Length: 163
Image 1 (cartoon, rainbow, N blue to C red):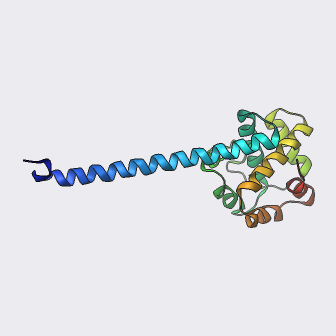
Image 2 (image 1 turned 120 degrees about the vertical axis):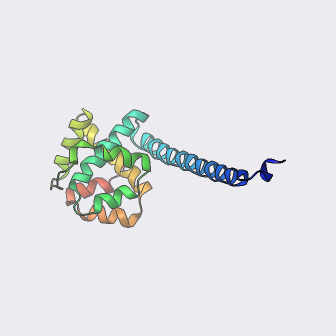
């Protein structure tokens, strides 16, 4: 008697195929998430002349500080367009957990990033510009305009400046 002739075996095989298909889909999804994140980091590494660890730290620091400056749902809208793995890192960003958005300008932004990364203000500004440029490559122009619209002119300038 073949397996498919046994009572209940066809259901078990179909169930196993469904589970295998779901597992493969999850694996492909995770591979895509990793590839998207790695591509973002590689771009940032080139733009900012950083190694991978520096690029990741810079991205998290700059985006975490930026999220402190954004009001309403804008931070969530920006995050939604970032690579999934970067979103996960931002969820663990302790700087803005449970705190309302606050107003600060370019100098305050640079100071916070400088302290986070333990670099001088010149290096912090360079990293900020690199992260903003990498984010610009990742996020829709409409979302960038929404983000920039909430920033004061001096901070907005960092988005427009080339590296």
